[in-house]
Image (cartoon, rainbow, N blue to C red):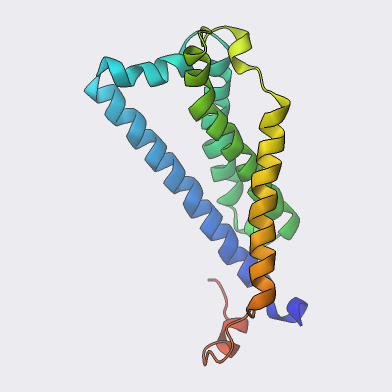
Length: 172
């Protein structure tokens, strides 16, 4: 029943949603950068100084620009990619990976400075095994809650008069 209910059109819509979030992320990130740069308040510009100074965080910053916006933007702009499930799944997995990298980029440079390590030195980028286990634990707890809730409620909207119509729509 699921194979008949979910069509290529539904995956196309998910691809458009992912594309929209990619553009929204870039807009929000650039707006934040632009406001901090334009205000030129020393307490705020140190945030970007730790991430763009000489050291390993410069490469991560460039990776985020190209890996979290430019590459997914050009990948997801194509109609063919949004209609091919393996390529769309790759794009979604890539975005999740880049989002995890962004979360580390947001936190670790300031954490290194708080520990007395210069953010421009390579050891400021060192990861710990607990970083991975905490990530797996949070994702596991989230998925456990989602799947538990899915067993208590129907996945499809029961009694929705427009439900049958949702199987037959087309993207133009």
